[in-house]
Amino acid sequence: MSVYFIRCKTLSLVKIGYSAHPLRRFAAIRATWPYDVELVRVICGGRTAEAWMHARFSGLRRKGEWFDFSSEMLTIEVPDDLPEPEKRQFKSETRQALFEAIRDDFAYMRNAAENLAAAANSRVRSAHNWLSGRNSLDASALIHLLAASPAVARAVDDLIAEKRLKSGMAQRETLFADFHNSPSSAPAIRAARAEWRR
Image (cartoon, rainbow, N blue to C red; front, side, top):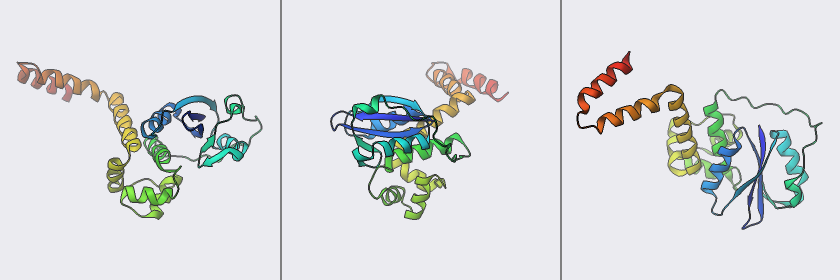
């Protein structure tokens, strides 16, 4: 896990958060934030290091994980003697990525659970569980959320691309697309399908 600092120069704000994939988190925030943002720093640490940073800069807190910028944020180090956090265990990277995307898009909001519930066409209690990582979304809620949240849609697109790459599916799709665009594609498609089924 890493603690990241994302700065919005326009508003002189910095988001301090943690993620297993800070670059992916930054891309999601950049895509949904209305101002230009930059990833200014990534350091080793997880939930405990993030909580320490939040406490350290509590006097600068604006809302949620957003703080007024301080030049100290660019150099401060987490103490070595922080206790190890109780780890939130996810059953899969997919669940972890969805949790992070939901957290990115909704956790900073006032009435986060209510906003998430409305976007997912679900109950507030369920939204609280999704934000805490206790439960995963059901299929219906995920479909509604994909339509409402660019960050969640992007995370799901990234997961699909990763799964396809791991399974070789992307190569097969490219191969089939090339054959379909060829003037004599029918025999080539049949041969490729036969090869793929082996």
